[in-house]
Length: 115
Image (cartoon, rainbow, N blue to C red; front, side, top):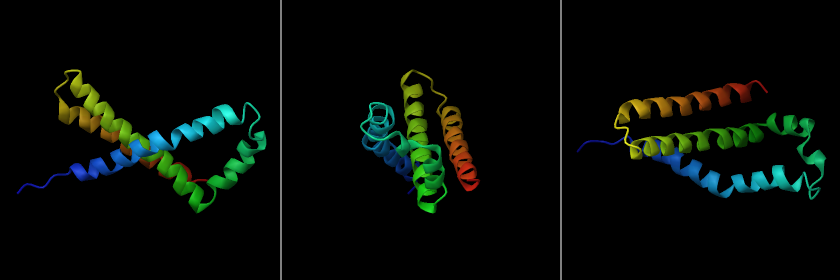
């Protein structure tokens, strides 16, 4: 029986989709509606508070998850969309989009470790 590498791709894809669907709208509300309308105080998104949050191991983990998992979700969605548009060079498209997701993930790790 041939082994498939699909679970390696499907795991981050599913997690990224869940994150994008359930958590991102809350972040958009907080940063785009609640603070500008005065529902939350502006100090809640201050630079010092953000750097302090990003400087902890938990903050780095949360930021890593919020950057990397949606990137893998977007990569897989892009691959499927390109295929649906009639481009049949699946290996090339998969190589490009997953390489971009991996590059973004590595960049996030490097940037977070520098904080």
